[in-house]
Each structure stands twice: as C-alpha cells, then as structure tokens.
Image (cartoon, rainbow, N blue to C red; front, top):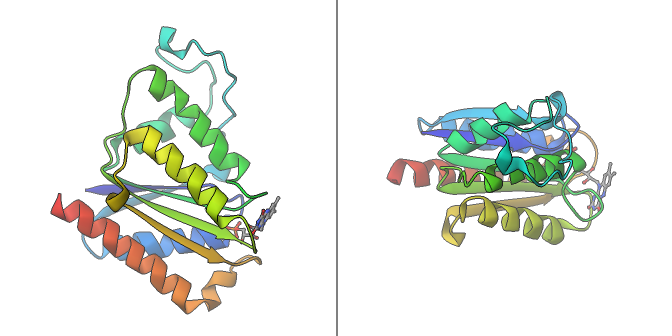
Length: 185
Ligand SMILES: Cc1cc2nc3c(=O)[nH]c(=O)nc-3n(C[C@H](O)[C@H](O)[C@H](O)COP(=O)(O)O)c2cc1C
C-alpha cells in the first residue's frame, strides 16, 4: 500500500510541508509506503486549455506533470496539502488540479480509495479552500466522505507549526487514519 502526498506550498520547509511530513511518518509506522512530491520543486505549468487532450497520447506540455499524475493515479491513498492563498489553494496546487483534466479526457480514474487533506492558513479562508479541494477529490476518484480525512490549522511564519503540538498530533492522527483505511481494504 502506498500514499502519495502532493504539497502545494512554495515553501519547502513551510507549515503545510511539515504537517504532511508528520502525516506520512505516522502512516509509515503502520507499514505504508509513502512519497511526498513538493510541486514547487518541479515544473508543472497551468493547463493551456487546448481541450482536445483526448486526441493526444500525451500532454503537449513538456514538464513534470505527466509523471506526477502517474504517481497520483497509482497511489492507494493520496494526501493533498495546500496553504490558503486568497481564500483558496495555491497556484501550484491549482495547476496540478487543472492538469488532471488530461486524465479526465482519457477516462483515467486514479485508483486511490481514500484521501487526506491538509490546509493551513494565516487567519481566514480555510473552509473555502477545503471545499475546493474536496470537490476536486470527488471529481477525481469519487472519494467517499467517510474515507476523506481533513486537517485544518492556523499558522503564518515558516515552521510555526513546529510549536503547535495539538496540530502536529492531529497530523499524526490523520496519517494513522489513512493508513488504517488502507490496511483494512
Ligand atoms: C499570497 C498569499 C496569500 C495568502 N492568503 C491567505 C488567505 O487568504 N487566508 C489566510 O488565512 N492566509 C493567507 N496567507 C497566509 C498563508 O496561508 C500562511 O502563511 C501559511 O502558513 C502558509 O503555508 P506554508 O507555510 O505551508 O507555506 C497567504 C499568504 C500568501 C503568501
């Protein structure tokens, strides 16, 4: 069983990334294989809206999106992590979400059966962001509500969550929950 986590923060040591690390560490303790992909470390361009993906075997854009989408599709469980930017996900995460259109146009459904969401904001907009990401996951592989676990928290400065023990514990709980769901499958 494998969890693939996609992180949309441009800060590699930011709060979202640190919480996702806790999620994955906890899941790994249950024997689940994990991989974290930080979108900011790769080139994932925004969808260019050709809208004829289905006529092509591969996306016209030569970037990292195809292999990231492949890993996303092959994962048994997925975790999406994004900070709140203007009441929504970051541009990095939105580019990843939009590039899923290629899968949709090829009738490819990711095989994941459960998901975790990690959303961190400085003060407002957590709900809007969670709603947008949940909607994406529903469209992506119709994740059932009871197999989608969400963690939200407040933090602003880089690494601030390191001092927020309850949030770190919530992240570990999320990791354990996703691992349990995978092991019970
Ligand atoms: C461009 C930008 C827009 C932001 N918009 C919001 C917002 O609408 N609501 C909010 O609560 N925090 C907002 N924030 C704060 C970030 O969500 C917060 O700093 C978060 O901890 C960043 O996560 P990271 O450490 O994982 O990068 C914004 C930050 C930036 C840089």
